[in-house]
Image (tube, helix red, strand yellow):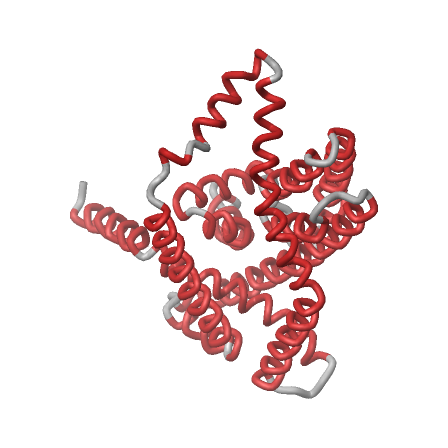
Length: 333
């Protein structure tokens, strides 16, 4: 093995270790890029319909988002707080009801015993230590969210300068291809974000309306959870269905079956009709690739990794298509 090969191998090892140690910094940076692209989609649409420059359009978009959030929050937040409090009261009753159902069948008694064992509060750490851990995690998450939002504003304020910086560190023969790649990544990520936002809003409204018509408990809270978890395809909608189904069980098994059927129909409509229709012109992710990305980044980075797995796959898919497929595989003789 030549000295050059050894040097290249050592360089890759050092880069891999550096990336691993800076994974949370890179995660915050990529999250800021996702937010910046989402804001950029709105800014471009606003500039196309007005004569505002980018800083003015950015300020107007942020103000519109804040005012819209405040208006919706003032209407829904009081009811949402009440439903969260009610959920805290209903959860012990739901656990007891599930335990009683499982204990009634001898074949399920081992499962019931394992559930009760896992919920044994004597095995848990002291409450004070748990609260400190939760408070520390929440504070760390708030700091990361603040830094992510600040970086996003800085990125979207002057995206051309940041693109020029990336082009400047790219070898001259590949700069034109890099410019096209950056544009394609932005278009794919922006289209994915727009499509998933519309899909999540549709799921939220339809779930809220459907659960309200069925007179299911905590319809608003359940619909909000279902809408938010739409951004986590494959895993999210299935996990979100557990909340309204479990709460419906507190009223009657018949209502639970009705809510489950409603959620399954809505989930399949969203997965096989609505989302593919919205994303047909942007990016098409295979369910296996999406699931493996979520599992891998979830294992490495926890919940933030699961949330950012799909945007990262969208970008990587464009990179693979433009570089690996077109520049390497297609030219391989």
